[in-house]
Length: 237
Image 1: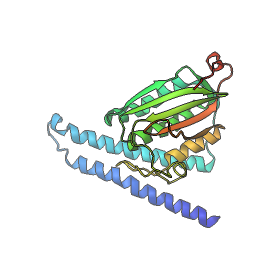
Image 2: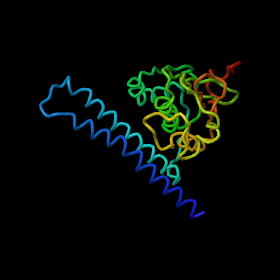
Image 3: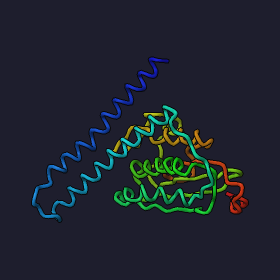
Image 4: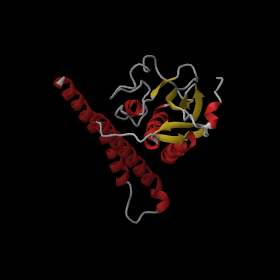
């Protein structure tokens, strides 16, 4: 048991050191191109690349901290009634700029459905799914949607990219595991495992919906809010 924990921590430190070096090195290289007194128009691409690299490093640090908090049991959900639209808006606020930079459009559907969840933790879980699609799908469109499934609300993140490779579905929700189609930005392989852990805290589930699209389709399922009149109408699909 102790040996397994030690190996996991060693793997975590190795992955953190390796993946953090790449965006920080890139930021340093782009920063070298910025010359004091240079024209703003000429230096704008380099400054934009520095910002992008630092944002990537910040996202990696955030993933690392979230993983450590989940591992230590420091996260305590505050479950309440929340609409899908409220959560979608949080995700659009944080992931919209990265999607625009990558040339990817994000649309939403089913904003009015209500569910029981911690709004902040649910937004983090969805952010992980959307961020994965932005970095790794290679597609041009992402849809966040909500549907009623019995007594649950299913939140979907669907992209039109290259999809998952055979065997990916069985392992990508484990820590430090990534799909075969990993984008240039890399990562720790912690985003999907974080989503899994956050759903466990809120008594929800998450996974991959096969056959729904030629890209990839991920779902999060949480209890519907029974007081919501919209939740009284079940989806026939």
